[in-house]
Length: 344
Image (cartoon, rainbow, N blue to C red; front, side, top):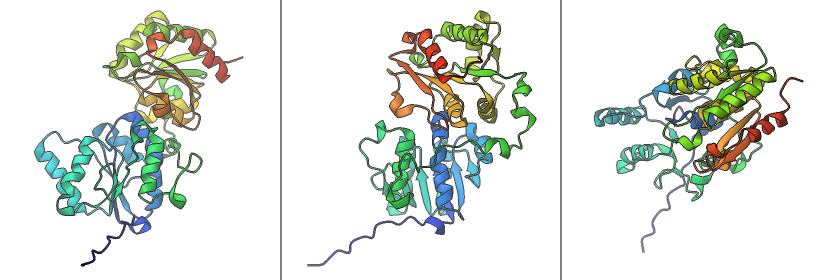
């Protein structure tokens, strides 16, 4: 009988890696929750050139992030020609290892194409043929940070083979202010804000109405906050423009910063805010990571706080209901009082 040689288990090149690729395409909340894992990759491959494959909304932010040497933004090509060009570029670079932190159908397809004839680079992700296959059947119900920690452990990026809540690098945004030299545009005064102020984050996915706390309740909250001597400042993107207008019609003391803040400014405003209240959305995650005390509002019919709650330097109090239309103003107000952040 001919004996078949047993294939050696793949070995992460660690400090010997020269070229490393990290894939994280979206969305904002998921991106910032992955910052701890990105930091772990940077520390595990200290001499490597680390490239991030992402999408245009994160380009400027990622280029300032200390974990990456290069940032490429064509992670979601719109045509087959562009997809082929992307995959050819990945082949040509000859990455020592690729960390797929998106683990979507798209990125699994990237691996499938790259692995034709078994020639894919070492790959950490959710594909059964990957060198480092994260095959936990419960991965879809894990919190993003826990899932990434386990994925990295499978790839050999962990002390003694595993991480725990205490030693896994937490998402960190403390680099933002020094990286941008604490520029004037990062200060509350740039927006005409005086302390104390708080941030209202009324946005959420436009197509998921259950995740949006009703405008009139945000307005009532803004009134109570202003009566307590704190300026309510509304942040968000273009989609939140009308929401901000409606809040300010009902509470004149609220101030709209909608469309005026970039990602860096969200971080630095949150750092100096008395507290933050917001829906389950990217800026709420950023505020928690930046260390702002807060109250996060979750519609449990849409997302489970156990799997998606913000985690940061100071994790927020979670207020939840099946839909946010069912979440009463008094519940949120009691949580704010519990934070102990209102002027006395």
